[in-house]
Length: 132
Image 1 (cartoon, rainbow, N blue to C red):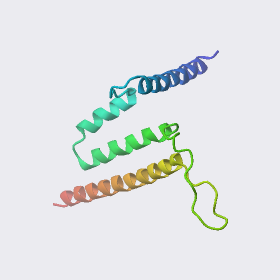
Image 2 (cartoon, helix red, strand yellow):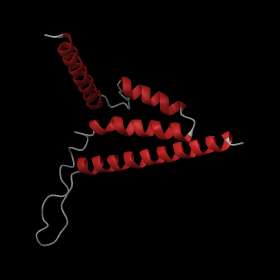
Image 3 (cartoon, one colour):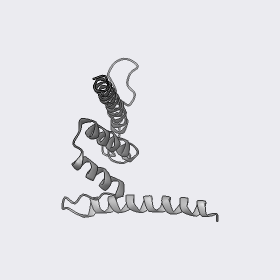
């Protein structure tokens, strides 16, 4: 087995182990213990120390990007909602997972726009100071 293949298998195994541990701890412990991985810990530290508007927006964006692939299996109790009533419109509605993915995607777009606005404003102020 090539070193790159071995590294890939190790990474996949480690991710699966972390996810299984998180699920085990969530189900087995009645206490409110937050189980997080290394990335979540780093993002949590950045969130605590972010002072500027841009920094807070960037951390919020990173948290949403981090959560995006982890949405599955969170809403299994709401498998399908009923669709809109009417003739020919009786199919299953949007699942809670689909709703959450759409809301997360929309929030990421809004955060990116806000970060762009802050950066444009900062550059405008910087140019104004250079002209003095």
